[in-house]
Image (cartoon, rainbow, N blue to C red; front, side, top):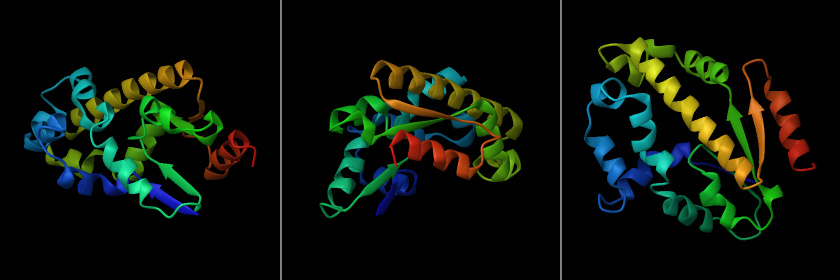
Amino acid sequence: MHLYSTDGVMAEHARRSAPDECPLLHQFMAMDMEERWLTRSPRAMLETFHWFQGECFDSIVEDLLEIPAGRPVIAEGFRLLPHLVAPLLLVSRRAVWLLPTPEFRRAAVERRGGCGRGFLARTSHPEKALQNLLERDRMFTDRLRKEVERLELSSIDVNAAMTEQDSLTQVRRAFDL
């Protein structure tokens, strides 16, 4: 079994990208932390966030094609957008989207140190940056939910009360394992 995380290769994909192929990514990279997380509305952040728009998805496909044939692969990450993945699936039962509740997202950020550490701490107002990030992510999850439903794909709502075992049980159920 091979686990491929799109999160783990974001920096590499950014390095491999060209500004004309991934304009939103290169605009984001040129911004300072205030521009990224404070001066734009969560809606603008959502609409211009490169990964949410599918930029560098071809790099994900290239990486997956390098994995030896016949080896089972679990690919995970928020960059696997339903409308981009669906045409690649032979059957819809080969994919499931985990849709985090706002409470789950907040808990995940807090487990990583909240707004006191990491990139949010590098803004002039970390708490406001956190609120913007969480609102952007809420809107993104709402968009994913609608897309998954429209494409008749599987999804699982993930909330802060769920254990890792609960999530695993639901994924197994989704794949009839």
